[in-house]
Length: 321
Ligand code: LMR
Image 1 (cartoon, rainbow, N blue to C red):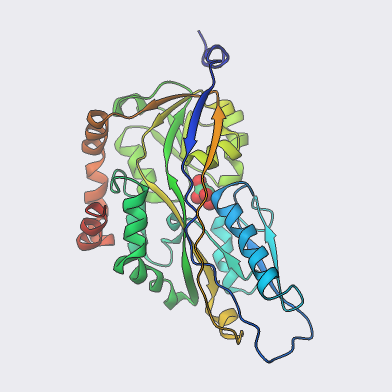
Image 2 (image 1 turned 60 degrees about the vertical axis):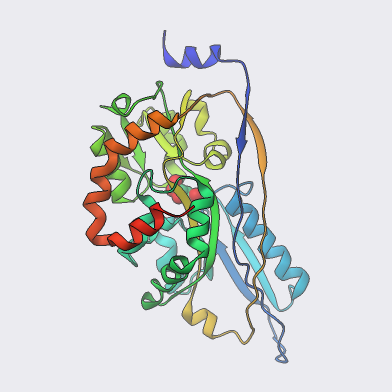
């Protein structure tokens, strides 16, 4: 029986709980005595759908700026769904002054510091709270500063959640991945994770994943519930394992140059959101024993990146609760 036929048979809809914690520091500018002839425009470019943690945060940010400061002084224009730039380009465009804000995933920031790769290590964080507590603590503050030498300013973090694995066949054990083609975003750790499992990783930007899944170019992919749902990846991925194997968080970035040109002060706000969606994909929740087997299979990836990331950072992340 082919897999698509299988999918149609799985009609019983399951409620999948997406736990999307939008957690970031929203930076608000206080009006100064200076009268702006024209509003300052903040172009905020991101790659995901509007109804996702990052998309909603961007809208909330825009609304807050509008309410508290006024569109006549600062106007936020959001470009979702990679309309303006992909994640691989957006940071350079921040530095070039072609966009003023972005929130790429932490995985996309290796170019600015290899240590940031810690977030990609599989089975490192026990749950999203552990990752968020790590980000809110001393290491999170240090990691924000790592990008400064490149002319960037890390304003804070935004949480999405844990990544799950989907495929066109059931995946339960590490060996089930063997020989399958898997999309990976850009992280070499994620690439090596699939190589360690004898799969064939293929690099692709987020905006192309749906069409490449539809074309059958990938057997599987990994992402958070909200990205899989909002981009309809599940339409071509009838099976999922709730692996919670790595953490997808974002760094909210601006350029130091743009920031220095503003004469306002900073203030943080916190926002939390949860959403429940329905999907027809069969989801297998990874058991404790299965998680142990996957962790053992992927330990060589931790070892390989220990020098680049630093054992202290890895241990601190692994022991975060
Ligand atoms: C991906 O490329 O899979 C994600 O990083 C996209 C995103 O920004 O959530």
